[in-house]
Length: 191
Image (cartoon, rainbow, N blue to C red; front, side):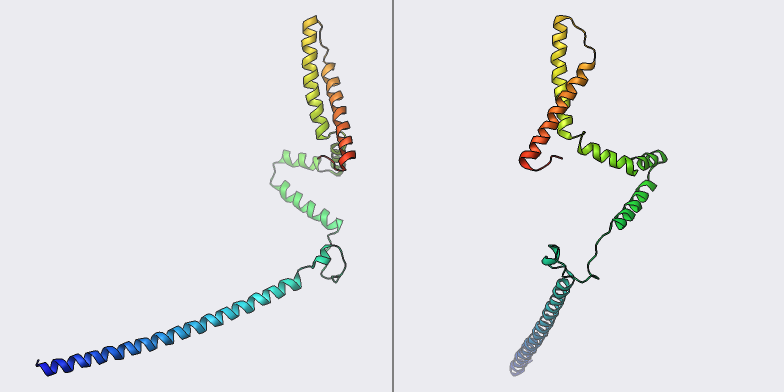
C-alpha cells in the first residue's frame, strides 16, 4: 500500500469513527428520552393509583366522629355485633376446639364451659378468690404456722392442724381488706 492510499484509508477510518460516534450519541439520547418518558408515565400512574387508594380508604374507613359514638354513618355501614352473634361465634369456636380434644378433655371442657359453672366461677373469682386475698392468706399461714410450730415445739405442745386453716383465713381477710381499701382510694380494682 502506498502512502497516499494509507492517508486516504486513515481519513476514511476517522470519518467512519466520527459517524459511528455521532450515531451512537444520537441513539443514546433517543434511549435516554424514551426511558425518561416511561419513568414519567410510571410515576404519574403510581401517583394516580396512590391517590385513588387514599380516596378509597377515606371513603370506606369510619371517621373519628363515628369512633366516638356519633351516629353519622348510615345503618348499612354500621355493623353492630349482637349478643346472639357472639353466642353463635363462641359456640362455633368451642366446637372447633373441642373437636381436637380427647374424649375426657372434651367432657371436662363441656362441664367447665356450662353456663351455671362459668357464672359461679366468675362470681367466686370476683369476690372470694381475689389474688391479693389468696396471696396474703398463704403468706400469713406460712409465717404464723411456722412461728406456732417453733413455740409449740419449745413448750411441748401438739398442733391440731386447725392452726393452718385459721392462719390462712386471717391472712385472707387481711388481703380482702387491702383490696377493698385500695379500690376505695384509687378507684381501680386489682386483677
